Length: 139
Image 1: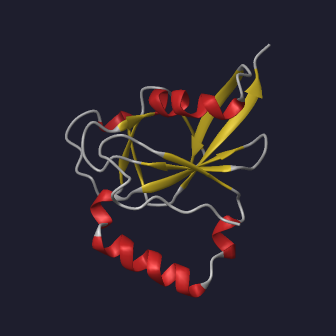
Image 2: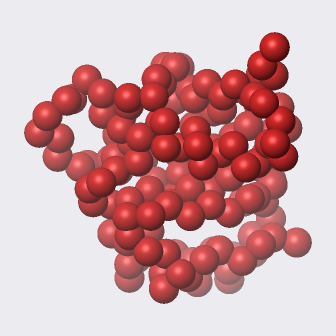
């Protein structure tokens, strides 16, 4: 059974919110649910910008809502948000997007956002894209 996605009223800008999902949860939706979700997302497209973080150790996806206006989410902030998902275990997390390892100073912005400064540290991501989180135990 899939968890209910938050409504637009539950999502506050510019904070991020996370929802745990199984990797196959997206394929189990019925057409009527997909139609309802698409109608909701069209009405408030600028306020809802989810991306997925997929853990390498268990294949689990975590949905993160990106802020659509500054301040945007950095990789360092994303790393801190992911730590509670490891039950207190000391793990090292490397984030990978489109084959590129992302260091802590990178800023995640929604695709199509105009970038004025620090273009080398800004990563534009499409809605519902997947960031891979390579999880290893610290020694």
